[in-house]
Length: 555
Image (cartoon, one colour):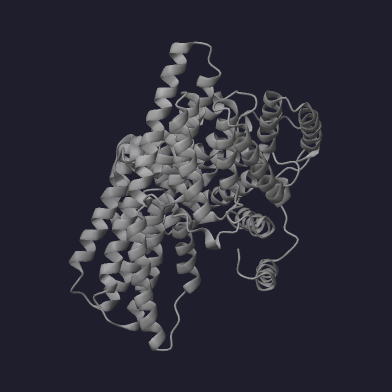
């Protein structure tokens, strides 16, 4: 006789016990705190599942309780669920915990070294969690308190701790766009490293220089960034293995895995595999939303990355609804969490402005077109001011904003202003990145478009188009997506001056490009491509270092 499938499956005895404890939470509250951390967390997670956030908040706002729960390492992603729910509910648990820890550190300033060491270790775990959760200002406060404790003893152990603290502090300051303070933090770490070196000791330089790389990248000091310097083979080897390791170690639902996916999406976007970059960015966003919910800075950055890749992907079709949705979500989240002049808003506003400009160009209603272009103009100006305040004039990010304004002024038929912005963008990019960089090619192509379509400077436009094409083909090959706009521009240009032989030539070139694009990236699934790794981590590192030694430190 066939077994009858049960319509109801009873809870395990363990879950039943947890539910019973939660049902009697008021009476059991003191006893709950004496349970092992894993069981104690499960009780709190049940409170979260039942929507009892006020009671959960009262528990998590106590430093001793939260510090103990943090020791349940295998529950970390679930802890993020609970924590974000409290933040969304209006319980400022991050700032409460940071303040409590800071006060504790001030109380134990006169205690012995062992007490301080224990507090520093608690601070490292608490600050690390707050950083992972995206609450950078509160994490910074925790790490500053740890650093203050480290400075109270001029001993070797505390020098090591100070370096470790500086690494963590530099990470959160990078994440919060406090780059000037980040530079000061790096210099402080170096002073402690020098002290250790004089005593024959070495701290973890790799961790510190890793954070320094992030700082330099954010400030557009690109000498050591392989993707930005277009060393794609080296970048591919490293990022694919990083994604594989993150998935293998943390699992496919962990925020650390989503971090590597965002880097992978950035790589794919830069090698012109735009369709796959959109898929990877979407996967990263899905993970971050499942872990952090909606109103979180990590979710906002994932929305922004997906908005831009979707904008690039749909540029030819003009279907920007999805890109606009994600751009607006990013801005909405950031403005909910951070001050209105925070640097993180600059890139999100820039992406939205780019999208609005394209929607305006395709709009058949003159009034709506003007309104959208003006909104885009306001967003671009705001982004430019934020970038100049943070980075100054001579920076790639500032140059990008000048270039974006140049495109917008062209759409607004302010051609002299457009030319001025494009030239300024090209000059800055050339000085920082060299004559043959991708960013330079973009700005050169935009200036060519202005001369061709609106200023009738055909000779100048032709030279610029050919330069842009040469750079694009050198970096990305014959199938580079950006070549389409240069080819179409040249066809229009030669039509305008009556050079029909060249018109015929570039129609053929464009046809060949279309056939090449149809074959390119048609099969590869970027996620499937990183599910396994043919090399061990040691082999990947050795291979990278060998390529560095052979080719020189250009990357």
